[in-house]
Length: 340
Figure 1 (tube, rainbow, N blue to C red):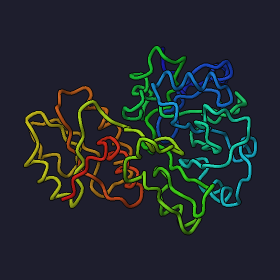
Figure 2 (cartoon, helix red, strand yellow; figure 1 turned 180 degrees about the horizontal axis):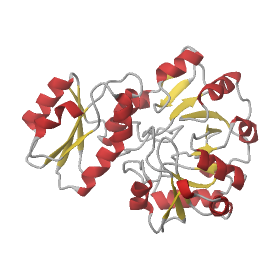
Figure 3 (cartoon, one colour; figure 1 turned 90 degrees about the horizontal axis):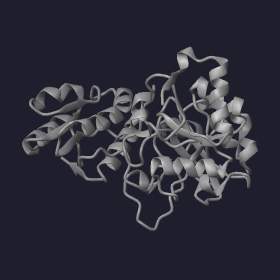
Figure 4 (cartoon, helix red, strand yellow; figure 1 turned 135 degrees about the horizontal axis):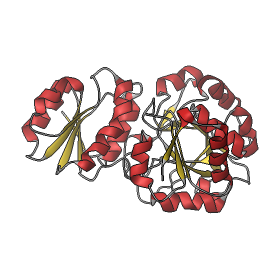
């Protein structure tokens, strides 16, 4: 299977991609957040194929991707005014809204929940394919379940070669972590997953926004996730990860004093010289959270190609998009976090 470069995409290629979706096939789609594994969101069998390709638990709901706000009423009901306030400001973009679903949305998409996650991606090519297919695309991240999410077509090809029909290659993702997920069926609205739209930006539009406990802890075995990425160990490389949280100078010193002979390190650019002789994946400067978001999954994924017994990671702060980065790191570590 080859990735089709979107920079050279013709109208015939768009039609071919749309035909894959309409026929029940699986298509790798680029978005500004991560690459997604897409299928016809109204075709229950096609949606089941997503779960098989990823090895994804069936109780982990999916997101429906649409080309614009005007499609919300096709698949959702009792849509509050605040949903339109948010889509006017953040769509197309990295924000998923949880809303009451209409009956035509399959249970396979929602894991049997009465709600569905809706998103309009910023990638123009993907919106064009959705329009041409005339059906929403259900798409989780395009990786084997539990592994770091793919931020390039090559990352996705690594996990999905031979399992899907095609990948549209639109280059590296500009955001690098999945979309923010906001539940609008409760008062106040509840942040279920931090992402490319920050908590602070949501509060500017909505006022009070609650943060779900699952953002900062593991869900219990019996809990039902309302959105992707809430319940299971996610984003994890093969080697175990330990997150060290606190002042960057102190976390770097803590890691140096405790790392083993074959330990790997995820660190800020300023500290990469501390760990000479060890595999190091820098994720950007201490104060550049946007760069940290773009690089965190690449860093986690890189260690699967190296001989490391364990991975230590410096933790960003929890403000802005840093909350999304720390959420992904903490889940990759199974919430094995040390505060110094």
